[in-house]
Length: 150
Image (tube, rainbow, N blue to C red):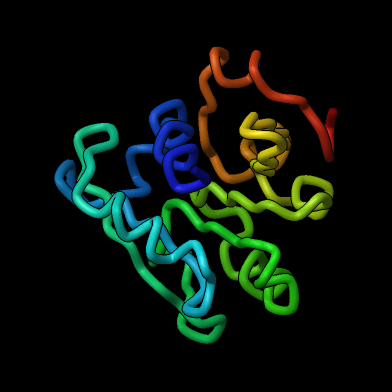
C-alpha cells in the first residue's frame, strides 16, 4: 500500500526543470538496499509520472549522491543510516518520504502512516521549499502540516 501511495504523492509534486538533464530522463525512486518495501516499489518501475518513467534504485549510504534520486524512501528499518542518507540529499531536489513518527521533524518532507487501512501523512513545507519542490495545494489540504515552519 505504501508503494501505491508514494506513486500517487509523486503525481502532486513538481520538480524544478534543472533537476533533470532531459525531458525524458527517468524519475529515480531510491531506497536502502535492504528495505523490505523494495519488492513493492519494484512494481512501480516503468509507471509514468510527469512524462517520466519511474526507475527503482537500491542504494547504500556510501553510493547515494543527490543526482541519484528524485524520490528517496526511508523506512523505519533505515533509522541507523537515515541521518547520513538525508544529509546526502540536503538542499537538493529530492522528495524524501519516510514512515517513522519523527520523519518530518528531522527534516524529511513526507511521513506516511497507515492505520486500519487508512493513510495519513504529514508534510514539512519548509523542507520541501529547501529542496525546491512544489507540492500541490490539493495534496497539502489532505495532509497535516508539521515540522519546521509549521
